[in-house]
Image 1 (cartoon, rainbow, N blue to C red):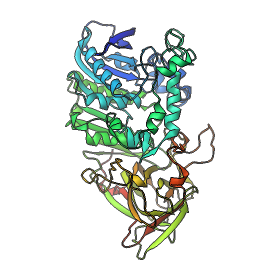
Image 2: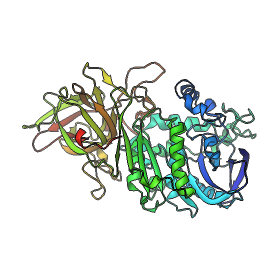
Image 3: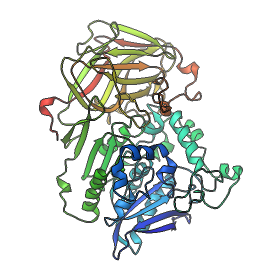
Image 4: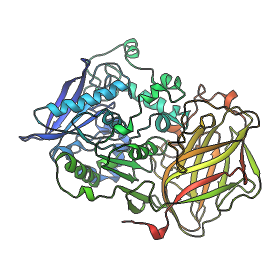
Length: 568
């Protein structure tokens, strides 16, 4: 493999991106794969996220046995494995980060325009076959939707792995509520890798020098050369034109796409990745929903093989049977956090889905298949632990896989409500069934969020199983008003044995466990606690849930009957 380091790639406005070009040490022309991100093209994963690398060393040795491991990086497949199969990988730092100078403004329209220019530059090089794909995980996947929507002439396919297409509802403002926990933490890390930062802790894996380039900018120069990321997000509470410029035009995306989501990505990428698959116009698109450690699955040898089969078919015209792949393939998680089975289908939601309603019974705090026959209500304090509804022990095994919805009728003594919904499960012995999530080693089954003033839905886009909120105006509650709200709970899958129980927790604040080994506590990286977004005078009060024949409050569950499963 030949590595051309620090290649300066011109952009249409005269700026440059700095990239590494990994290419086969052989004559000929090869398809190119581009990736554009903020974490440092020269930073090894052991430097950037040592805990993830330690997990690989302990639990996923097959990754290190599949290559030299010298080029493993955060949120990227192993480039060495792709190059040896006849691909050129162009890995660039976005503006203002790592080796690329400029104004640091992540997730901006300018960045996605740069992504277009990067694709077209790769197509013109002497080593290029003229056909280009895009690769990468999380941040590197998010940009693929935006670049593809611009229709670069030489872009032949995309492979977004764990990357939401929805910048508003699925990344920065779940249900309209600002997620300061993740965004503030994430932005602090980005500032460490700002170009010219003399105090960056990240080292160049090729030279051992500071990753942020030779320039040493003063604090004042660094401040002037970057966006005010968190402040800007706070200044846009609604889905306005600023946000719309950062969400793709789905109908423009027509290139083949292999979209990979992970059940364990609740709170950041899962929902927006799956919905990206459903919304794009491509007639050649495939969805995989997997489980497992979030930041390493793209490096696993079996998944490198999956990526290569897709890329070979669309970038090299190899007839390898890819067209016969089921359009949808999802795993079902077992109660012990393993894979119970895979289900293959050609539709999402799965064609075998039976939509079951479990009704909330406030008088007994139960989830029941029986409708509530008389009006009832239950109250909880907005700053308390909320109210939980549990099913009786299941009389038979239960498998569900797909999107979930909660319909509630609510009122409050406050003019607005922030609702936090957590779906949990317990085994027959009463022990919680939890999963190794992206940010929590004991993640619940799923979660959902909604700011009640954002309850307005788009009737043309909403479905019974997936409400779509416009987030374009605030509808505050009047005193005594009882309002219906539909809360999307993020997609989930699990197979529960008979005797297990489901629990629905509805609260006015984040679900947080007690501190656990390793420093994790509930969903702490995804907390919603910024005082400017959640002033007490607007949200503090007594919240009520109402139910009855005229006010049905229920959980809509995507049950997969055992007899109708097509599994492998």
